[in-house]
Length: 189
Image (cartoon, rainbow, N blue to C red; front, side, top):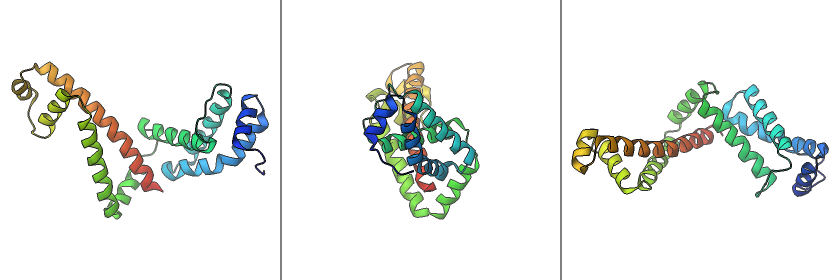
């Protein structure tokens, strides 16, 4: 099918309930979106489900959806988000991670660069922590002190140490999860 309408017209018609607009968007983007997901997941069924769900949600939210970027960018972002969510929830085959490990081993230069990126991300995450939280994290992870030793050194309770460390680790892990998913995605392309 030849794409005759621009994205803003398609979105306007979609919002008005025009099924032809949805079909036009689907025909225009589904194959590239599928390949984007497949390059990472390597699971045809999972990728088909992601694309189907994306277009179903697009139709269901047609009257309320606010696309501030291009339609293409919106769709690709939605696919990447759903791929990352599948990876995070463990619905993807473990072979994906085995394959990523093999690629990293084969591409040591890329792996070293990725490792540096992860280290920088950890450093940025730690630098962004509140002062006390950062101090507790560094004493725990860099100086290998126990919770009791940290509490004694900082003159705070061990419960406060535990709470601050929980906050720090949660933020660092969240930062690493994003980086790890991006690295796996980049390695798959």
